[in-house]
Image (cartoon, rainbow, N blue to C red; front, side, top):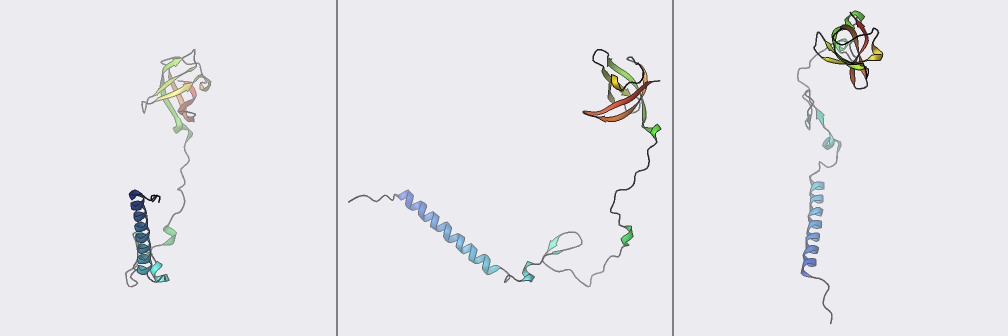
Length: 150
C-alpha cells in the first residue's frame, strides 16, 4: 500500500486557505447586512460650506450668506501695457571671450549676470564697457538682446 502524497505542510496550507476563504465570505455577508438597504438615502453625501463631505443634510433654517454674482471674476486680470523704455536695462560687460563670441553682463540694478552672445550686439563692445540691453528668454534661460554701448 502506497503512502499518502499529502504532507503535514500541505495540510496546514490547505487549512489556512479554507480559513481565509471562510473569513472572506463572512466579511462579505457582514458588509451586505450593514448596508443601508441600498437605497438612495444610504448613498447620499452632502458638502458643507467648508467643502467637507458629510452624511447629514444641511440645516435649512441656517442663515444664508448673500453675494452679488457680478462680483465673481472668472478670468485673468488684464495686465497693463508695459512701456518699452522700462524693459531697457543698464549694465557693465564683465567678461567677454572674443574667440568664442560670448560673455556676461552684470546688471547694475539687480547685480545679476546675464548671458550675451556676439550676434545680439548692435555695437562693437569690449570688456568693461557700460551697455544697455533688453532681457529675453533664451534656450537655457534669460539672455541679453539688443546690446548697445552707452
